[in-house]
Amino acid sequence: MSPPKNETLDWLRLIRSENVGPITFYKLLERFGTAKAALEALPDMAKRGGAKTFKAYPKAEAEAEIEALSKLGGQIVLRTDADFPPLLSQVEDAPPLLSVLGHSHLLKKRTIAIVGARNASLNGKNFARQLAADLGAAGLLIASGMARGLDAAAHQGAMGTGTVAVLGGGVDVIYPRENEALYRELVERGAIVSEIELGTQPQARHFPRRNRIISGMGRGTVVVEASLKSGSLITARMALEQGREVFAVPGAPSDPRAAGCNKLIKDGANLTQNAEDVLEVLRPILQSPLSEPKQLEFNKKIPSTPDEAEIGKARAEVQEMLSPAPVTVDELVRNCQFSLAAVSLVLLELELAGRLERHPGNRVSLI
Image (tube, rainbow, N blue to C red; front, top):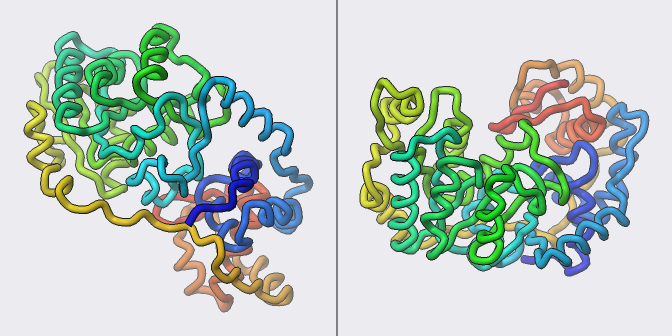
């Protein structure tokens, strides 16, 4: 079920607001029904969580971002829109929206991610280019991160069949600059997406967030070359956490760029020497119907708010139970005398105040 058309602006304002990440975004929608109602509640909730001041993302700035993206020929695709990547929509912390340049209809295709080293060898780049071309010819969209080296080679190989670049900055920021020609071609023939605000320069902290989108879009992730400390291994780990297949191309033990891939194979990744190795694993999955993405209900009954007396007691006890070490929300609820609704509300307040961090596996910790 899609939200009302005027929700796009409110969705953008909500996800751009301070201390609101994807999981918090969905919990706020669940509690308040609409992004507009959640925006109105944010300042009071943050104040109850201990924030001295809190201001929701300004409407004028959100309108300016939408207008600027439109002038570039782009659009915002909500998680509930038909062009949102279907597998990505099933990820727990899926971005509520993506800024898209290029052909958004490509995002609906069945996808495989190809990632690897920036300082790639010539053989590695040639392999990635050919692998992307062969998998693209088999009907798959190739997703990667437009980094120099392996990512760029994968995009080049799949340009004729369909490829999407997920950026660690705004979709209007070309990074690295040496890939400007590739960027232009992706806008013309493929697609470029990002969850990050227009005009934002890439920063190190953005890339793990970007990587979860790359792995989340695909039915599997292929790592071509990677050192033991490569960001590509983070993408592979995220793919595993999302229940996706991981493929790795073996390399010479003497090459540090092969160490990460060889370790992945040792740990159980699918050894990959050509496109058929990937397709052999994916074929049964590709032949099965795509499961329905998790739906966001906009007309369901909004849960009742616990009375203030219970909330007041819950605030003190929940904060006392929390520490910098992550703990599951279920464990918090089991070890206190308050309802899940009360505990969830207290956690939202703390998060909006910048005092709580969420972790994979429904875990939380104090900052």
